[in-house]
Image (cartoon, rainbow, N blue to C red):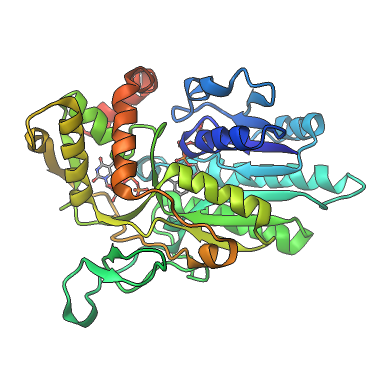
Length: 375
Ligand code: NAD
Ligand code: TYD
């Protein structure tokens, strides 16, 4: 089995590559990545010498290079993680998002189509697996069922009770309603993937996942940014009042879900992947602050004074919450890690891997960050 994994030098892609190489020693993984500011080869250092792994620095928009790689590697599967992934950047520069997320996905689809259709067996045993986000569904309300103030307990997860901030969830058939340029570009790419199934019969799968956290996430996203800023005694910029809600999933649980769906999911299906783990940003931030302070030996709550309320993100989606019971009921997947354990592991990882952090935050990112918060 040869799998092309795009975006494998990024956060979720790298965690997926590690998972697959460890679990399936006879699979060949060919990683395609342009190495933008968000992709870093130091992330892939642990697998660079693995004989079943190959890294190729290619832009997914480069159709010729992608097609050539298909001819060289004869892939059975493609897993497409490559994307511009940060909402704040998409607000400043939507064109880059349209280019990579829409045109790049289309370029991969076209290369896969031309190559697989040239084979005697055509699409038999092949899969194009596209990684998407819950943000394509838009935003959910914070509702108060029967007059109870949120958070309240819901029965949406059959495995354990959890706190939810509303009655509604995103389901696989929830209508797409993206608000940010990022989510609009992801929605568009999802439509292209489904169109290639419906039009050409390509065996495609799309999964929509909630916010991931864990090792190797670029420190422009909330959790690693805040851990890094606490360490360097920099302000912690909370957008608006910190009331927005996200559903957090440990990245290795996402990688396990993709593995399960990749092997046993039905072609042309959509699966939602989520943590049943909703947090208001400000509550999550306080957990991060307490955990970092404890692990660094700071007095309790010392870093709370770094919390700084800043202008809200334009079009800031209020709440995301995934219902992933389809995946549990049909394929038996559910999150394995409790949030308390996951956040502890995550904070420890960033504190122990300062060299990785310094490496990825040098240069361009530093300039972007200073520009972003100059007011
Ligand atoms: P990331 O920004 O950490 O990594 C993206 C990777 O894609 C980087 O290595 C980058 O170099 C590469 N890339 C960007 N443009 C490219 C191009 N034109 N050609 C080749 N490579 C290119 O992102 P992530 O958080 O790992 O997200 C991976 C995927 O998962 C994305 O499609 C994202 O939309 C989706 N997703 C992310 C989350 C999340 O919480 N991070 C949640 C749900 C879905
Ligand atoms: P982020 O990690 O950017 O993920 P997404 O926007 O894709 O959900 O942000 C998570 C939440 O944290 C989101 O509601 C925006 C908020 N946020 C801040 O309050 N401050 C920050 O500096 C960042 C990066 C995010």
